[in-house]
Image (tube, rainbow, N blue to C red; front, side, top):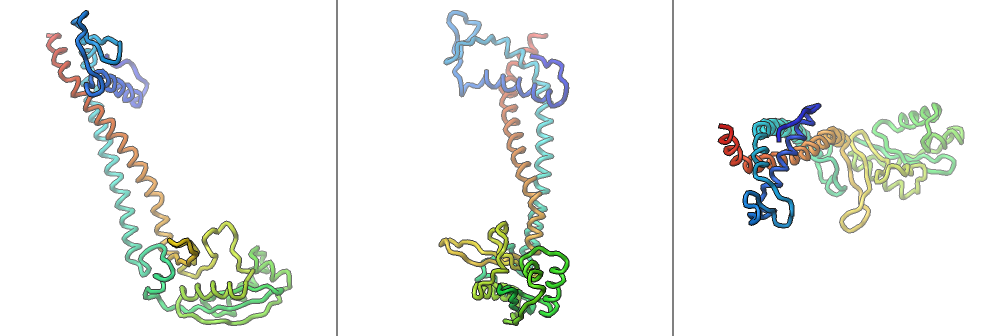
Length: 293
């Protein structure tokens, strides 16, 4: 079965695979048992299939063996290229995971009990309370609280649309202020802020619904989350913002790696199929060559 004209290498590859698969289908003894047809000994019958195949068909198929071998080499080269790219992507992912593991936090996210056991950097954070129009906002500042409040007023005067800014504009920037507590680390500060929000029913801290598990509370280096533990209970967890950014940078590589693995699996299957077909047809190639002499 010689190959006819094709319009592209993609079509050529598909045509060659079609021939290889036809050979494998016809010659695969594990799937079909070939019996000699007593009425036409020069032909044989496939049990479970009334189709009669002329053995000369296999000689015709065997003429395509050079092209099949060429295709096999091409596919093996393609497989090698995919394997090398896959290994490169995996290496990039491993390097980023290693950098994350070497940070002070060590991971992207930890439950609060484990996070508080870490030797955390001492960065003072001060909790403060603002009462605006009878509603409460609990803030956490890593700079002088007066500077933070000044920033809030500046945002309000420049049209910011968060709850605090809207409430400040509504009441002409009139507010009451109270300093609550100073914490020695950012994570202790975030937990303290979360507790005070619950204690004072601070409605102006309510996070937008689209944040999901995110409490909306964060400092320069950490973000506070709320999730369910193995008992189905709500617990706090802490995300390292720096490590999260590094992890996000691996997502594209992980997607590429997954695609490469799918492609590799497909090519490996085609190579196996093609190898089987070649092995089945090689005896008929010798007969074909002998017939040409």
